[in-house]
Length: 396
Image 1 (cartoon, one colour):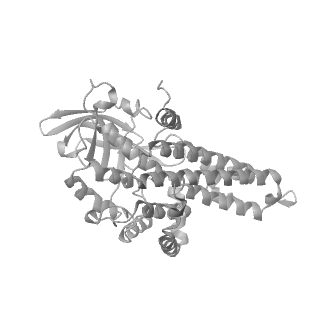
Image 2 (cartoon, one colour; image 1 turned 120 degrees about the vertical axis):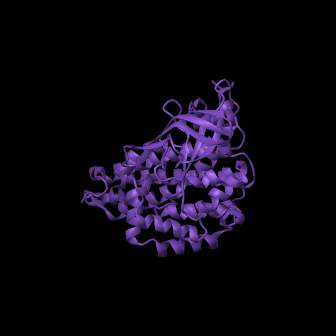
């Protein structure tokens, strides 16, 4: 891995940072933090947040690495991630973020019509693509998807239920994994990916609220007629399309810069807070806990950069991205746990409480980081990927 490559875009990072520091007013940061910190999603995006997302699109910073012919910036994958990183460091994000890794996959497997219909509007910050993977009996075991898509002339008739389809309540399209061949063996070979217009008759989206005050969704398909032109890739190859998208998702979503920002705030709190007659920063146990987190975040950064480098080299990154996802999400839980110990009982106060410390982020983090260990593939599955595909150990 070429560590020197990491600083090639220092000037662009400075440009992004300066623009964000200018455009992200105090009020706007508060709106983002209230609704989106720890990857949370509100029932409705505030108008100011939507407007900011469109301004990111106008800057060319959504889809920066996509071809210009589809409305992208024609620049590098690393430069796109710099935008994501600088946003994460400020507790903000691209709100149509799921579309980032979907489009990356669509560029490889999508038809020309699909690309032209979707990518320019995603790049402008106008639309989102919701992920339609999980079902009541198919979570990390994605090969067990049961939603049926039955061929009928020039359409597929789709029936079934998806769950935890975050963003589906405002997305324009559904990145939908279905079963088109129930007899296929092994079973993952019977799956097909679709890009479905969520306004299609027969689709119902119902809210599903999680313990971190975030909104996800249950999505029902009742004899929905989806044109064959909505198939992404080849029929029966949907599992492989999904795996490619998930590898990219882990890079875009689980970002060490967000956790580094949290740790920096905690360190400043320790430097400024006196307990039992001395600064918290002078307590050996506090210093030890913070130092350990600092080292672990440095490890997470190396895993992250290594995965980016492999993607840039055109190499398979499934195992490194699984390592990154598993390590950083469990690190996030350790971070908020240590922070709770450092802050003390007042850290149990929720965001919005009058005496909350660090704006209640530690209490919220205790609830929110639970989701991170099973979103985009459970950590048990990540360990299985590392063992079987990374080390060649037998399955089962």
